[in-house]
Picture 1 (tube, rainbow, N blue to C red):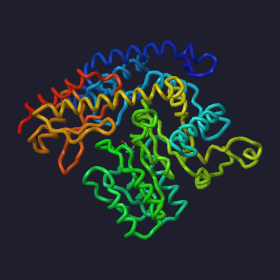
Picture 2: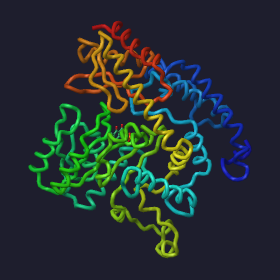
Picture 3: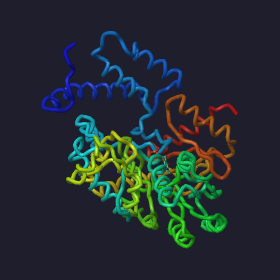
Picture 4: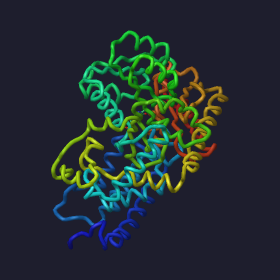
Length: 455
Ligand SMILES: Cc1ncc(COP(=O)(O)O)c(C=O)c1O
């Protein structure tokens, strides 16, 4: 075998072109082979097909068809968020233009730990991250791998600002990554306030802030994972000010509403956050990863400062080279900002806002279908694009079985969530191409699966 070609450099585009054609053909073949939102047969069947396609993982002699074989297998065995019946998670179908931009990021492979590895990528990241932060009413933003890393950094910055005794106060509706970050960072056990209605109750928060000595970090959620609900942000912000508590808002899901003229008002109060989690691989249609942590006080980033002579020697920084190492806990770092920048510029705020409006409207339509169906119960009117529903009169085991049956048959991917003390099926509508007919089919499939599920 001759030396394999490289993706960048003068020969890169010509080397990539035929390989891209192979990838695209294999993707199409894999999607045809799957024929639905996810592969049928469950984990054993999928693992057997993968093992078959893979064969010898590290053969003595290479296989030139590996690209086609493995891409086709990955596509055939994918849970495809572009299929309107794939609605379980905050797992969005990436925009084609964002994915194309991501290819350029892979080909050029800039690494955002030093300017000499990423001259234009670092300038792009600084400008785009700041713009996104300002759109939310904050000053600057770090790029992260998603909501989890953003929440971890938020707690780290709180610890560095207030010391190791800072205690997280959050609702039971908060994402698990928040209490986990408190554990990771060695902070006191969090105060978790029950949220029987799905959102943080200001009166209960007031009580907790009164009962516990500071320093306290309140974490509110704009777009809960289970139900897409938004905590009462202005009231929470007011309480934080009154009690001298720091405020973090996890808008990993709901942050995308900022793009929409119709829905932006639901995020009133966001600008009061000291730190804010945003995540454009949810309501932003980006390929993973596309997280951000926005900050009100950029000087707090001094806590992340790190000197490594090979990356940001003091004399280099003094000579004007940007010091990038303090913008992440990671060292080598992909330019995830490129796909985000391309998406923002290609669609504009109104283009993204239209996508937000579409998925929110489809979710409301699905909720109406559920409500009008005598065989189903609706949890509540969706606030963003999550609909919780359950077969009327079914117990929790039957609800769980509906979801597993549809998944096993590869016919629909529904999520599950506990609310009201009961188990619900969850449809998170993130696909702007979803049509009303798809929603009717989703409900029909759930109905059939319920009928077919042994009691
Ligand atoms: C509210 C919220 N915060 C944080 C996260 C974690 O985000 P990621 O999976 O990108 O780490 C999620 C994931 O669903 C979420 O719903």
